Image (tube, rainbow, N blue to C red; front, side):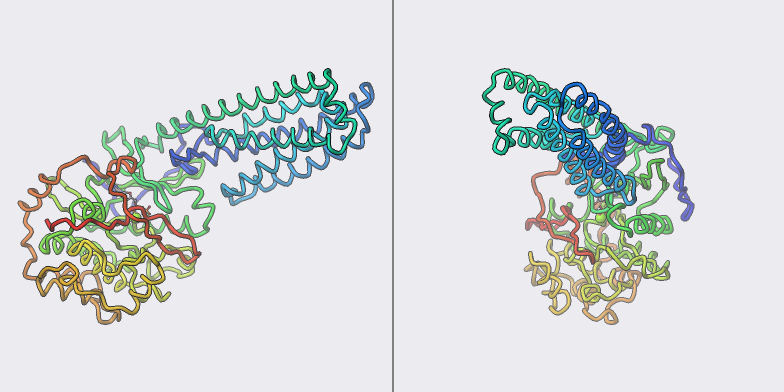
Length: 561
Ligand SMILES: Nc1ncnc2c1ncn2[C@@H]1O[C@H](COP(=O)(O)OP(=O)(O)O)[C@@H](O)[C@H]1O
Ligand SMILES: [Mg+2]
């Protein structure tokens, strides 16, 4: 049995990663995209630093070519070398500055550097024997430096390596329209033969680059996937969200699987609030003792700055997935489930912590030590400590999924415990009806509905009678005026506990449902999800960005269970 750390004792450990710190980190660790931007940026910086020196020293070769091979004017070569040095120097400065360049900035820098170099090389060729220039094969050296700089999957490799190659030949051959000398060369068999030789070298290099890039890219991915974060060996990815990836990892010492949430470095680079938010998530979760809150064991940072925290691995599935697969819950079961979540959040509220993103995707239905239908509240990712400095939470926060957004938050007011109560009411509504209180593809309309419209009573939406006390509890939690709701989740928990159905969902009922609903574990891997792909409902951020919420589901109308 793992001994969970007492709250507040989640350790911060500086961990040496299994690979060298220049090796792959979790930049865009999406197997589909297969990116490893941290390592790529480092490789790119190294290639440019070395390339800068090589480029400058080749001026000596220009001098020899001009002096002994009548290669044109030295000024021409000097001007091109200086111009390119300025471009590469500028890009290098940006590469060394923090924050790390975004994926887009990096692509632009890559295309700019190699594109400009290709043009400069072509202009040098034009000065020195045109299409028959010995510098054509010298261009291979420029391309070769990309073996250090870029390791892309083959499709992207074809494009990113193809761009300088194309530019080089466009400038070299396009010069025939302006220069009679180059035009004449195109009719000279010896010049054309020399060009073809150069083309062979360049295209051969290009092909090697693409193949090599793809091989290194896929090896890196495998290395990452077998990588250890300190004591934890990453096994497979469970989910990829807006802020982090959640992995199953193995602790060899404890011989046990755990869940590791890794902060995405690109998210950290993109938003200054990402790291404080991540640390707040760890602190908030580690502070809570309630059995229905996911337990945090550890917090760590690797040498290359990868932040992660470790929690108990939950078997089961989120409420959203469960309802998507099995339809609405019976009222007794819904009361049982939401009651647990309410008690967990009640403890958070007592600690002055507001979850702010309560929704079916963040409530896990699991089995703990043989107890089925055991609830775990997860993802305190936008939790707010009400005593904390509000400025930390002031920008870039996900406000919450529109389907579960309280009216006051929708109006831009700060969230408090009653906002979580509203969201919990909406979750209970969702469990009873299989649908949230308001639905609209249009986010603005959805937000408007939360602010102004009274939800249809769950029994009407479901087309079936529901216990009046349960329905009254839902409707009170969903009051527009926060004062009219339960003031904390604990109050809501007490209200649920006093419903006639409370306690009617027994251990035996839960065990029966668990046995009947046995099927391949849905939580194991986002790649193996069944075909029931939910529609995407965007989460709103204050900075206008949206967060993918592929977990938001609109279930089919299956019978309650
Ligand atoms: N401890 C855990 N055990 C198993 N699965 C988990 C655990 N924590 C999160 N997950 C899975 O990962 C998904 C995303 O995790 P979450 O903490 O909600 O991150 P995000 O900020 O991306 O929403 C969850 O919906 C759940 O499916
Ligand atoms: Mg979540």
